[in-house]
Image (cartoon, rainbow, N blue to C red; front, side, top):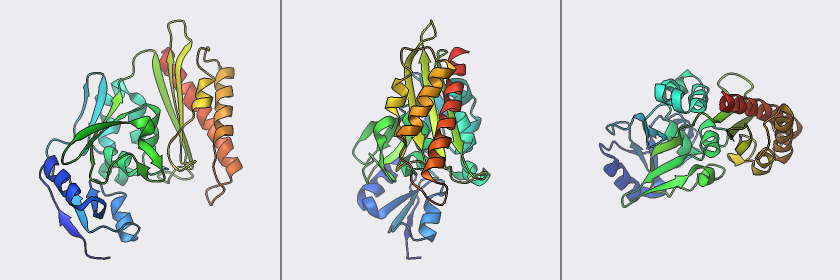
Length: 287
């Protein structure tokens, strides 16, 4: 492994200054569950690793102004077990509880997984589905990015090279809103072959006022499935309607044949995942 310089900033401002100085030659170390394997396998080439684990007060999870806010050092396990997450956005707790294995959940950070943008990762899909707000800090500015347009391509996001994701904000769901998330993984802890998230908002008479669907692992990044979701709007969320939307979602995916399965298999499994996720979203919105 080539020699890499190490920095251990004590403030967010110092971390951002180091990023500004080194840009694409620097890597952020938080949980290390993605970065360290990349370095060992020489997938990434960096001159400097910026370890942010000593940044103070960045492991928070709270609810402010109708949003569940997650600090950049909150681990997946923290998100999965936080009472505030379970109460205000239960699907987010479920997603975090299913990420990787115990080691990954105990060490990996939720914000880091969003920034890393692994196309098979769970956090990017739920951030896309619920249109999370991603807060990015640089040495000179703070800006927010929309979750449903944050992910551009294979490991590519709207982040600049000198920006640090300091917080991810998810909407607190109301009584008439529900979300579900399903994935297929060949073995526990393995990367999923397909994931689907579903969100429904219902009117007082039970009609769908807003529907969202998003897939993961099937393409180069989390993918909003707008045509499939639009089939549900202004309709009662009957089993027949959910099946129609799930079938459209599967037909609209563009998976490829690989060692994980054929494109035909992935399309079929995505339809089942979509139907199950939609049922969960409907049941929660009707509860």
